[in-house]
Each structure stands twice: as structure tokens, then as C-alpha cells.
Length: 385
Ligand code: LLP
Image 1 (cartoon, rainbow, N blue to C red):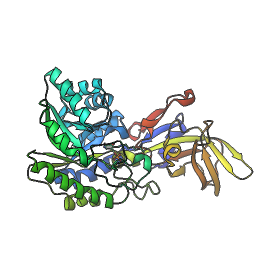
Image 2 (image 1 turned 120 degrees about the vertical axis):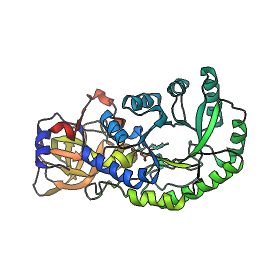
Image 3 (image 1 turned 180 degrees about the vertical axis):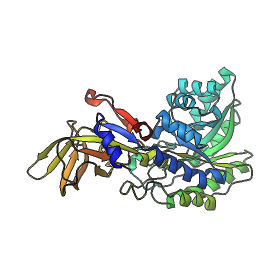
Image 4 (image 1 turned 90 degrees about the vertical axis):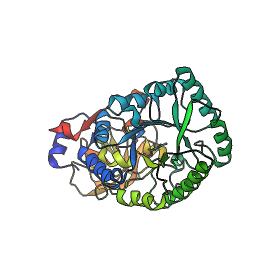
């Protein structure tokens, strides 16, 4: 991932910055094509993971659609060249303005999460003289077995329509004449590393599909969301997730009717391993019980360790000295501004360059300007020459 000439180009760049290896992204998309798209599956790229235009354009070229969660993301997807018929719009709190943008652009489908949201979309669609295609986001009550902040498919989570409300919602739909029900949607959580939750999801999706169709609705879209995890410990050995196993699981477990297509919304598994946060050691400090490597990136640039206790692999790119144990920390005045604790890495000196790995998804998009930190650059492998 970091041959010498890449590290040499890093030396001339102002740190910190996000670096994207587009070859990794393209190789990942090829696997998605071979095992998913070529099976007839529709894959929507979840922009929330990373909405860099270069990333979106490559995903679009590879045949993916777009999964958006805000008006801003819809506009960005259109700017990147996705056609409106490839755009799904999800989110538990869509504002009126955002719904209007989606209606005006005539997007493929709204994934709807509550009876009240259905009424609002119906009313706004009526006002603009449009018909809105919708999928119901159903809460399957499946445990994704992931960090509690990013599990979404349990009854206690704010997402989706619970099974006990389904009949009432279906009844309500018959009164909402500006809505056309085209599908059902699920998303049980993110960074799911085992296949079992997806198998359970298939069982639930099959039951609900049968039930809703038995009520006389025709569902052409079965959308099972995203959530497929990546390997944060070994990004080199596992730079591409096991898409073969993932899509085969759905092939085996999901029961589609002849008029139905299976849809996915993948974010992390598409772009996660292609990105790294490149940072420089500012200072080293020998504490009484700890050695600290203080780097110029902080939780402002990558919040995942502070927010989810996420462990990102750290590679030192410019030192071959024997290993030493460090806490690798940022410059922000909070103790949560720690990337790794007690990690063995080659001894570092001021100026050494470090790569924090597997940051392509939910890295750059979640950065903040806390402490009025300066904006940082994004560097793409194609730009390095
Ligand atoms: N569809 C829906 C409805 C979602 O809410 C999400 C992610 C996705 C698809 C894409 O999921 P993915 O394939 O990327 O797992 N910031 C957190 C992750 C939040 C995920 C939010 N929803 C993190 O850094 O781990």
C-alpha cells in the first residue's frame, strides 16, 4: 500500500491528510461486480461513508447506484453523475426541504421509517403533483452483534417500523394516494463481522415479504441495507472483504419472487480499506509509566477511536528502528484524543510519518473543526504521479 515512492511523495505534503489508494477501491468494486452485480443484485453505494467526488465517480462507473441520507447527499450524487433513478433516500428524520429536493429530482425511492413520515411525504408529493415511490423500512429485531452505537435493527433502536405497527401502516397506505409502495427495506447495523445476523435478517425478510404480498401489495424491491464489516486488524492481508461469501449467503437464504430484485446499501465495505489518515509525529514524550507519540492528527480528523473505541492499525512509514511501546495520541486537549494505547511500533522521532489505516469510511466525513483546527487535504493515489 505504501511503496517507497509513495512515502517519498508524502514527505513533501502538509500533514495531516487523508490518502486514498484508488487501486484498492477499484479492486474492491470489481469483486462487488463479479459476486453481486453480475448476479443481478442492485448495489447502492452509501455516500455517508465517504462522499468524495472521485470516489463517487469510480463507484458509479463500476455500476453502483447511490444511497443518500440527506438533501446534500442527493445533490452530491447527482453532481457525481448518478442518475436520479439510481438514488435511494433513507433516514429517520427527513426534513420537508429534503423531501422536496428528492421529489423534484424524482429519485428512485424513499425508504420510509414511520407512519407520520408517510403522511408528510404524501402531502408534499400531492402539493408538487408527483407520485413518490416508497419502501418501508422494517425493523426486523435482529441483533447485529456490533458496537451498540452502530446497531440499528433492534426494537429499542429509533429506526424503522416495528412489526406490530405494520398492519396499521399498510392500511394507512391505501389512503395515501400520492405514494406507491414498491418495496421493503432493512438495515441492521454496521461493521458486522459475522454472517449469522445476515442469515437471521434473510429469514425475517422472507417472512415479511410473504406477509405483505399476501395483503395484495406487489414489492419489486427487497433492500437488505448495508453493514458488511471490514478487517481493521489486518488491512493488508484483508484489503477486500469476502464479497463472495457475503453475496452467496443472500443467494442461498433470500427467497425472491420472480418480479423482485435484491438491493444492498454498502458503505464501509466499499471504501473503508482504501483510505488512510497520514500524520506526522510532532513530539515524543517519555511519561513515568508511558511513552507518548504525539501526532498532528487528532480526534478532529478521525473520531472513530474516541466515539466507538475503534482500533485502527497504525503503520510507521519512515522508521525501521526497533519497536517501542507507545500511546499514539493527538493534539486535542481531551484524553479521549487517543488513537491507540500501548501499541508496539518502531521507535519514532519528531517528523516521522505514520499511517492510520482503514479510514476510508466514516473518517474524513466525520471530521470536525473543534478547536478551530484547519481543514485538511485529501490526496488520491492517481494524483501522486
Ligand atoms: N444503509 C443505512 C440505512 C445506514 O444507516 C447505513 C449506515 C448504511 C446503509 C451503510 O452501512 P455500512 O455498509 O457502511 O456499514 N459512523 C459509524 C458507522 C455508522 C453507520 C451508519 N449507517 C462508524 O464509524 O463505524
